[in-house]
Length: 337
Ligand code: FES
Ligand SMILES: [Fe+2]
View 1: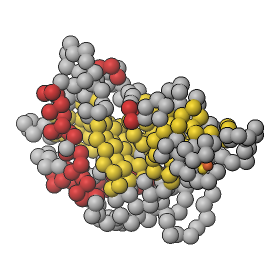
View 2 (view 1 turned 120 degrees about the vertical axis):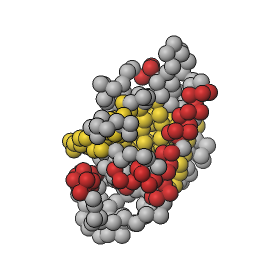
View 3 (view 1 turned 180 degrees about the horizontal axis):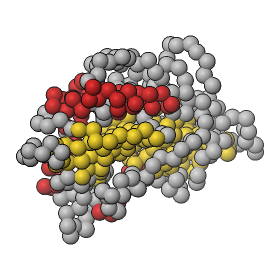
């Protein structure tokens, strides 16, 4: 999809689940048009660096070896540290102080891995919010839920979806009937723009009640920049979920989805039982991708004739999104500071 803003978005972005990065292993990643290497060092810390070795350009993510807190290039054995600096050159008693791999700050929480991206390499100027510290009125401790990975997590790769477009689903109340087969239209009860956060509360009217104000379900959502949103459900089920979009290059993104489902009373297991798995799979894991059948072929409209219902929150979201664009869109010459 062609969009009038950059895919090199600034913020925190999900790049996978902790379990995908075992201790002592190097893994190749590709995000924001860059080849990257992720490795979990011998102390359990996860690092993400530029993928190509500064010696002769081998991709360290393909065959790199973890040694202590460093990663060793598979081509000639140069070692690189978590600070991106050269730590060892085999057969030489010096290191190359001038060469550096770029370091991408990592935040790991509740089994999910997030990476900070700023096109010029600037350090994070805000923290990734904790998934379980949001909406304290709805949630319980993280231990009250089944593990999200692998049972309740899904990923789809290289989709032509810009992160902003995925988040625009939030204030779009009128697509639920058509795309998701909803029998009622959700109501935007409250929304708020605050720094890097755009949050909202929607209510799903109770179809069995004559009172239009009576809600069967309320969904609290918190967008952490454009990387994704964290939501908590307040209804017959009280689960939490995260839905993330991470640009791979200037035309596609990987999308990540994880659900924390409350444990059955008395169940001590981390692993969800078969009947819970089946229910969550059918109701939530499949339907989340319904929007993709629109997004894959959609064209971005800059000045949409929005319904009066959606116009205010929609335009607020679009305006808020501009703060994460530190560089001009691809193909547009302009200065960036
Ligand atoms: S290319 Fe990495 S050590 Fe030579
Ligand atoms: Fe949707």
